Figure: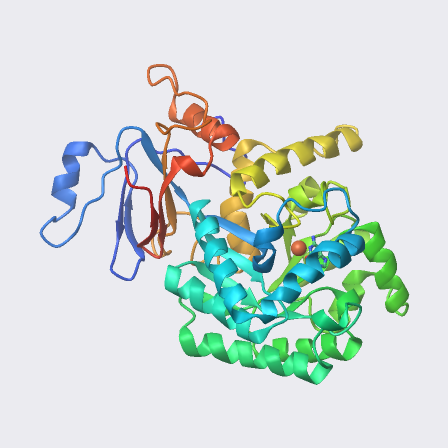
Length: 439
Ligand code: GUN
Ligand code: FE
């Protein structure tokens, strides 16, 4: 189909059958099945059959590679503020409130429901600094059935007393206890993993970064996330704190925090040396086009085409609440807008993203960034069934479909560019329905 792009092909199948076992694993995929053949292929005495209605299609679930759960109730605030000002004025006072477990419970419950409603089947969350609140975020993801990385945020300096870890030792100890909590509630890591989460080098003393690097080395299954080369204000402050390093790549690599499990948010300002370093160390990039160009971020479009050209893993992040929207469809659209700005800036060299590429970033690209590409990201036999049922006949803003004229590719384009959560009527994670809109 014309929507496909070499390397990031989008395959549109008008009539297919997926079989999923009780563990939520895809066991077979028939790519061209007539409706009347389904009865022969499926034994309905032992298997339940779910047929899409004529106005529906199925897509892989969205993977949000960068999301701050405690910022759920501050989305949209502080437009245009530079990162360090925005953190001080809006974010730290808000995140400080998560010392109260009841507050954390209330906001996190609403946040996870909100992300599932947007079809986010996997999220990589920053929590607050508080271990109790972070554990309840993990509990709630498990109870609601969302696949998630959950990180206690490490912050040992450069924030007010009310929102800073008591000491470096305490910060690392709390991290270890949050790791233990997730290993207890989901021992096989079926849905959850702890993610090591130094907020960024400005918030972390060198010994804290070193301690987290050691925890990362001792726990080779755990992902790592931080903010990386986001904004001029942040890069300048980082250089002042760590004058011994020429780049953030060297800084984080020195502390053992750049590995193939690293998820680096933003990466707006990249030198050729740093591109090479991320590629060599197989780090993943969480591209957050909304926050990059509105609040906190660098007011800068990240070099998305260059990441793709260089074969650096890249996915999309809503960066909710630096990003005002918790919708991955919005993130895809803004990724396209930002990429067009980059095309002009590069005098036509770095081409804008196609719809199929934005969709790849929101699904399989995100899975690669999270090292989950063997588990999720697309429909393949052996992967787990994380999927969204999209219905184009819902009241909302999605461009009207002309069933006589529009091919499925056109319908898909209409959904990506104008659909919203009202069109996402069922959400599956690991074969289980985790959200459903009653028809
Ligand atoms: N850098 C450090 N903390 C944050 C945050 O919460 N949001 C963004 N966008 N950048 C950050
Ligand atoms: Fe962020």
